[in-house]
Figure (cartoon, rainbow, N blue to C red):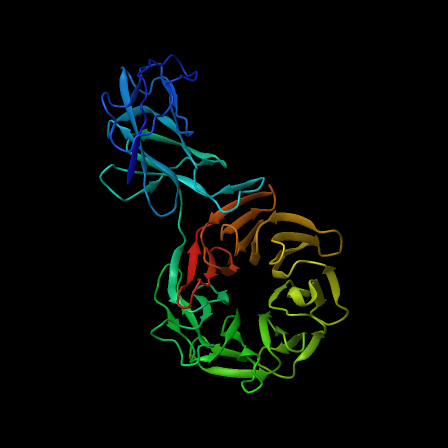
Length: 459
């Protein structure tokens, strides 16, 4: 680790007004001569460095003159978004908590937009330990995190890394969840990959664990999932190959018995409710409806484009047509005319819906938008790079950006504030946010067997 010591003149603090304690000299080694420090007494004091680091000692925090040392450490701890500071004397305690401002200095591929912040926190650990804990106070801004501590040790601004539930999978994409399991489809691991590199499996894993179970035999290109109380349904893609038919299939959660419900077109998506299952066909560009146990599919919508992403409410099915149509649609589950909610979009992908609005993410122009279900102009929620997955929970909309900072965001629809939850995610394709659970997403990886399924605790 690179250590940089602040060469600070000793200064007496006079009340809580800002005390000028000089600038910050950078040095690759330990300070020469006097230990870098500033002094406070019972009146308290403030020290601010040129990089934005600040210590505010309130009146009554110490009862006698106290010398404080500050050492900046450039480390490589996972999730860090700013330098680390070693404050001394090690173990020094205070009668009142002192306030620290920890700067955020991470270099981003794209600047954060207005009302967009990193989900950064203040972490602390003793000087001789690697077990960092998160401090309670968390006032984040684009420039730093303000926190409090009753003692001295090491301090750093950082983000909580998402937890990998499954790793080293070949291009995982589809996700679904119930109250017990997270389900996903992938091409397997290097040890379990099928002979046909386009085949894959349906897996399940309990949140909080890494014990992944394959529920099916190898199947042609599984690419979408929906789950109900008894079964997991999936779109068996068949690579749009006329020799290998595409099909809607399901597997029983208890017996792991597999069924083919219908062979049709080139299935891209699936969603369902208490009585029916709905799916998008990229070959015929149709949206279909069919009973849960199979039967004759009914065309709900023709000329639907490449409907890889579906959403629903009690009355309607919603979808995006991708680059084929660049439109966002809805159709009643009972059938009827198709309504175009938005057109001339930039490759619309992920979609979500609440009682008033339809939300969608554009891969092409990087916008996340909303428009009234009843009709009306669209509104930009967030401008990213290449947006993919979308999920809605309460008043929080989650999105994935596959370019720029390769990030995952949480958009507060009430305050219009966007919080970046994770950076450096390698092609986060799909995201789900089940009620009462973590947020889950797929990382496709840059190469085969670099894919992950991860979880993150978020509002």
